[in-house]
Image 1 (cartoon, protein in one colour):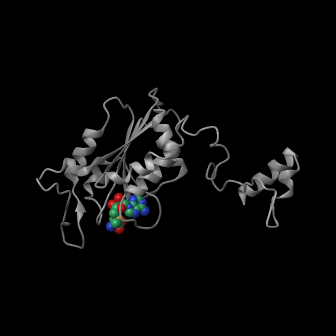
Image 2: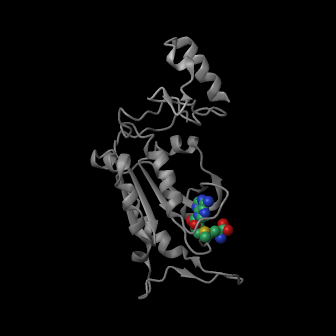
Image 3: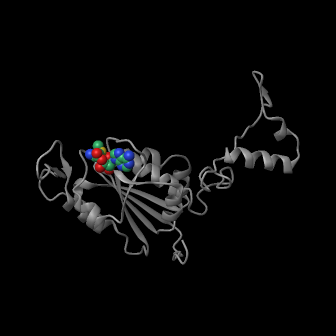
Length: 226
Ligand code: SAM
């Protein structure tokens, strides 16, 4: 984005507001995300929405006005949670509502959101969330695809994963951001092969073994567009 303010603060913070906080750590602590947290490049925190419920039963849902099936997540605990979680030191904060009805999340969004100091995800459950959250608490509503999941935890983790790998230093030397699918519109990653050269009569394309870099590049460009 032209003229976008890039904070000098190195660590990117991700916060997830959920009624199932225990679902986040197993994924967030593994592999690249876990390593990036140890290196203090990113920090991922899961918050139990029930901590901000105001009644003694820690109720975070209620019936919809006007009738209808199922329960909705209430606006007040979510608004209180987000207000508390917003980091004072973070200059650029984005609050994302996970919603099947939201705008489709793309690689472009991942790149854009990696520039924020803190990204807060609101994970819905039940029939959904009181619409005032979208209107007054979240900056945007994002969907990970045209299907309905039981909750917003997986969508939040999917988006977080795609955003975090755009943060400088998160990918190690073995992983690369170069020539990836969706870098440019209509361009996907070209097919890649590794040893052995032949397996069960399945051969690696001849051109990749030729050592002719011009030809290899032309083959890859051609296949990326296909
Ligand atoms: N009644 C809602 C609808 O028809 O759009 C679906 C609610 S869904 C059972 C519960 C929660 O899961 C949603 O509030 C949202 O947070 C999350 N969710 C489900 N599917 C999603 C998707 N494709 N993308 C993002 N979030 C999703």
